Length: 227
Image (tube, rainbow, N blue to C red; front, side, top):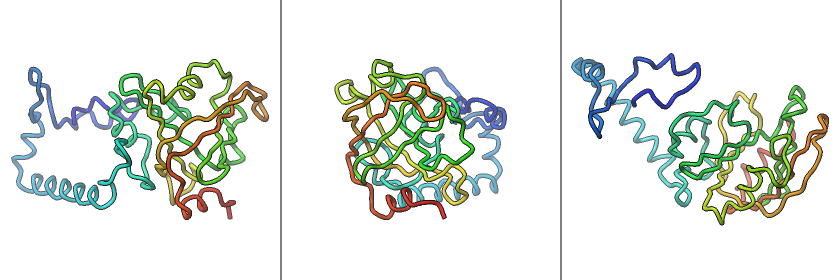
């Protein structure tokens, strides 16, 4: 609403889209938005858009899992996740790189592209895989070991009060499903140091237990071979 959340090249496209402005310790409607609302047609269009958003929320997103803010099996994009987790700013996907820890909110979302594709560089070709619908193996970023900060956070997440939320999509190039399915929270059971195939970089293979078993149709869709 203040145009401060979006970062990177996308920020330029919303320079003038400021709905709220700071007023001492509070916020008020911005001057530019107030002026726009004086136009009855614009005001009606905004009202219709807000009502549609509320309807869509009640229909698809109003039953969040625990205190996560996310509804199981609904789909979310990177920006949606950053917003719902109350991060101060949006993080571009390249800087998330599979997972990202936010120290303020103590949240640690994990994003998995299940089918990596043949054109993925060896250094980011992580062989993540489901063992069954309640267990998952994922690889850390490259050049990591069991003592690396991110791996240590994952391993001690429950003790540290860190929420690890899982988001999975079949393939980032899938024209039907660009977004990630939210599959709930998970806990790291153990990890072992490995060498990444192709690059030979150090990494950690982590075994996760999902809080909720993945619904059968979603599980079959994600794990089925490409056709």
